[in-house]
Amino acid sequence: MLLFAAQLAFLAAAVTVPFVVVMVLAARRRARQASLLWLLAISVEKELPLEDELEAYSDGLTGRHRSDVVYLAEVLRSGDSLPDALAFIPGLVPQDAVMAAHVGAESGRLAEALRDAALRHQRGESAGVSPAMSLFAAGLYFGVVLNYAAFLTFFLMYYIVPKFKKIFEDFDTELPQVTQHLITASNVLAEWIAAPFAAWLGILGLLVLMGWATVRGWGEFRFNWLGRWLTGVDRPHVLRNLALVAAGGLPIEKGLQAIAREHRRINIRRRASTALLHCREGSDPWQALGLAGLLRPAEEELLRSAQTNGNVPWALRELADTIEQRRWFRLAAALEVLQPVAVVALGLVVLVICVSFFLPLVKIVNDLS
Image 1: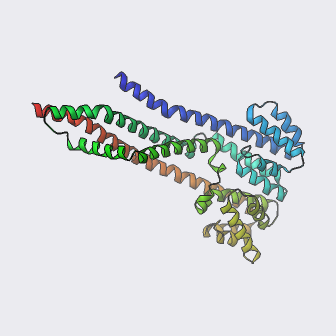
Image 2: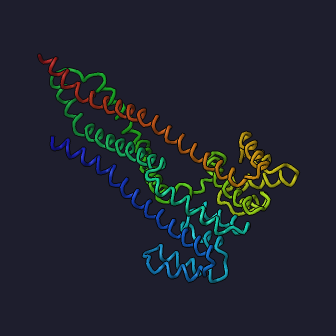
Image 3: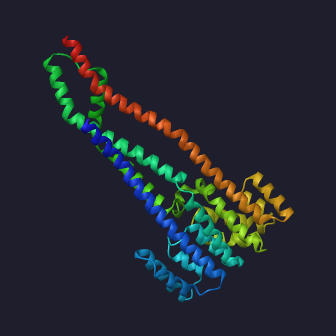
């Protein structure tokens, strides 16, 4: 019982400690970014000198974050614009805020862009455990359990199975079929040890990557190799940036130019360039965005109707929120479906291992009775 309790305690600690550490680091990073965004938004809105405000703000900071804020003030003193300075120091604020700053600066609505970015970031911070955090927690749990089961099975195969085989040979009887199959599978894996070792390293690397991405923010990674599959993730940010341009009374093409030039992902830059090309060829902006894959047909009609009624900025923001909420809902629903399936599959693996090591005891008792 003590050994069983120790195993459970180890498993609980292996899951809980990394999860808590990742949650604390992620919350700390989000809070720092939100605080800096509010400082920048208020300073720009009140027309305060950014360099002096940042240096005064840095007095209460420590570590690398303080160094980054001081460096931001130095870059601004050298004559760079705020959007360029933020892009020059990655991770200081979220990437979507950097893009919003570029669009806000070109549309003359920099303060509004920074304030919107701060509000969105603060909303995400106060939301608590997001579906992305839930995804990391589920991956951490199943990864730890699989690793634990693999090491436990290796121990049993190395120390217990030879003793089982010797006992059964002494009593001139055979091991149960299920135990023999498990031994055969283990021998095959032992002969091809590179494959399970690579799988173990892959699981460990994936868990580390998921933890790092959760702390840094999944949106901070470019993932250009995923191409079009990430378009849906970036569409809300694109629509919010276009809402800034529309609120400033400027043509949508102005925002597309900034996105095509400054967006961090190649796929979105290409799509914005395609939409800009269609606009120059005579298409209306919503049709151009649809042809570029940034809008769906129903969304095009919605924005045309909003343009007729004169509320394009509001419609673009609401559409961005709807797309984002739909994406998070689908991810949460997928997790709710996949977690029980994964638990059942994991349970079946554990069941096979337990039965394989329990049946030999039952069989030898029956054979000797």
